[in-house]
Length: 79
Image 1 (tube, one colour):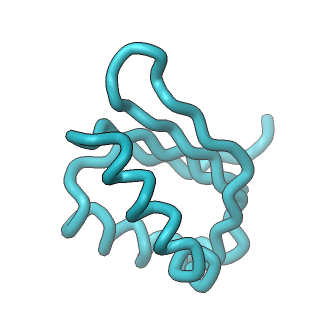
Image 2 (image 1 turned 90 degrees about the horizontal axis):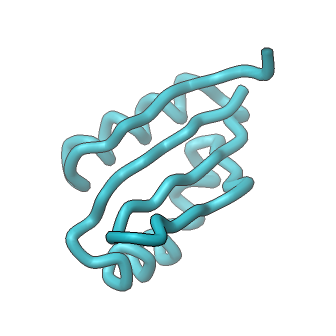
């Protein structure tokens, strides 16, 4: 299972520093970063994660939504 996550931070540089600083937190939530994309125009970012534990990942996502602003997130599986 995968998690596709998109958000548009006010500052990409600030967001990236914070994102990198919380790698261990995401790993503890059962998430492995597979790919990270940055919008060509603007500060939007999209991340693709492998999900190892759906409940832990959902709990992490709920916390991120409360503290990190709006996120567009979808749990997906290969068709």
